Length: 435
Image (cartoon, rainbow, N blue to C red; front, side, top):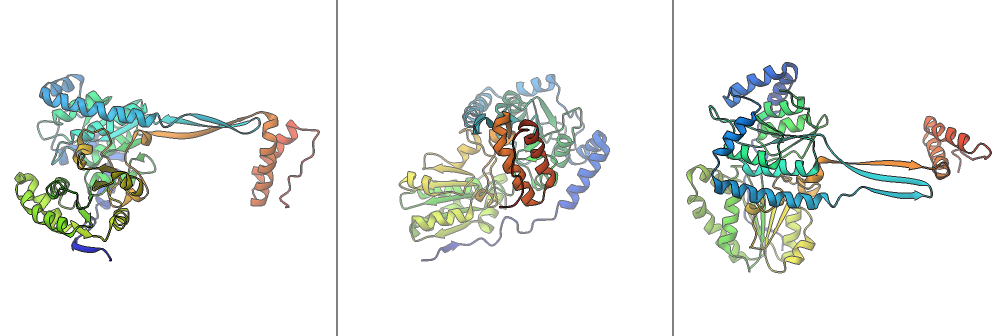
């Protein structure tokens, strides 16, 4: 049977999105031209903050002292998990060399970028975990300078827990500046900072647009849209847990899609009956986001069997993908398009968001069909090199000369010709483009 939508979204994650390109371009241009002064002007306007932009060691120490000991322990726990996972990821990338022809050696080398700019949201929520996810991976990768940039609160500054997290995870500089101006300051090397080679971390639509505009002159992790989550559940799933997990992700924002895909109508109907009450039970500050997201963006899809469920999931390519179904190994081997996968009731997206070790900076809006999320590899350049003996270069030179002439690139061909003439003066070579 075709997919049956028991609940269909009335909007998509791009519905009603304002065109912020013009606003962001103007801010970036003015800050690039005006430097520190222009950035400070925007900080005063948007952040309503006139304290130190670059936190001093004393300010960092004072902020850390305000963090309760239990929260410090939780942050250290999360940092340790993220660090260990990032170290294991880094170990999968090795410098190699291979003799492609006798005497001709080609190699690969992994080199971390020098300067990383890590944006840590601090507006509606204090994203402590984003500091952990971005700074830790940059540190493990081996970046020589890491900036953690987060919006300050008027008259207060950056949330102390964000300062503590960024500090223990290895940030070399902590910058109290939000939005486009913060992204611009890292990119353009303002306030004495090195120019960032890569910008990472989540942010609002203005931060995302700034990264999109700057991509090319600086690397970015990805262009992120509203967070999204999909749950695959069969008759073995606990409806209350499924509903709770959907609501937990809907609270991210009014336009954060959540999707349930199942082959069991009874489960689907029970989940749909439970969700409104779970939303109503949220604190007021979270309730409206979840209610709006569920009303306008959520979908519940009934499929014929698990193969159709898996195909539906791959079509959506969700940022977060949870499987609450039997035979988890089948799902692990079958599914191919997701940012991060959560197998079984015993794990949940919230774990990945906060403390499990895998990164929570992930592709959204279907981008998981072609890319993964933030990892230690994002900060590393995989470069190549070659070296050869004169004898080893002979065959490569001959092939290069003939291919180049066939392409009409005579200059390339002559770069090979001169070497053959120098290294093998007593030999004759057919370097024409003819077959």
